[in-house]
Amino acid sequence: MRRFTGDTLLVATHNPGKLEEIADLMSRFDLRVVSARDHDLPEPEETGTSFVENARIKAHAATQATGLPALADDSGLEIDALDGAPGVYTADWAETSNGRDFTLAMTRAHDALIARDAPQPWTGRFCCTLVLAWPDGEDAVFEGRMEGTLVWPPRGEQGHGYDPMFQPEGHDVTFAQMDRWAKNRISHRGRAFDRLVTIFE
Image (cartoon, rainbow, N blue to C red):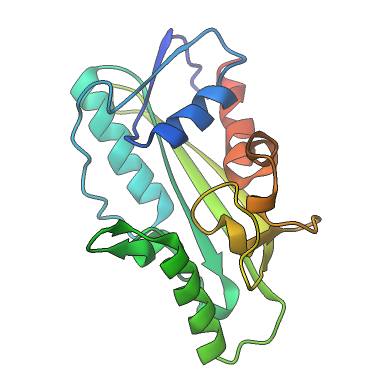
């Protein structure tokens, strides 16, 4: 697999929290980590129907615009009893006229499970797909998953998104009840990064 030999990594995100998490995960390397926001890049329309398609759209748009290697991720929650939904539409379930509301999104997921009379435990997983793209058009894909169960009512104040209703396998607390940095080490994103970092070592 192609090795990363540059000194700057562009993270194709406008989300300061996500940039901070990724910078922390990459802190073991002598790299300058910058964001799409730092370069005033527009957010490309995510028209893919899979995590890898959407991550590729973001990574290639950023690398072509800047000439820097660009890393993008697309993540989401798959609930087995909902046939894998919300999946790539995980963030869309939170969209409102006033921005994203993940309390609404979690309620929507819970209501859908109740409407289907889905038996507990409600199993599912968080998925993360990372795509690292180079300016010459080559890219590499790294994936991570965290299996778990959906709980109700939501628990915890840490994390973001659907974290308060997701209890990872092997734990008795939700992602939102974990220390943020400890969660990052074991999460779906952390697992994808464990695969990614092999090309930096």
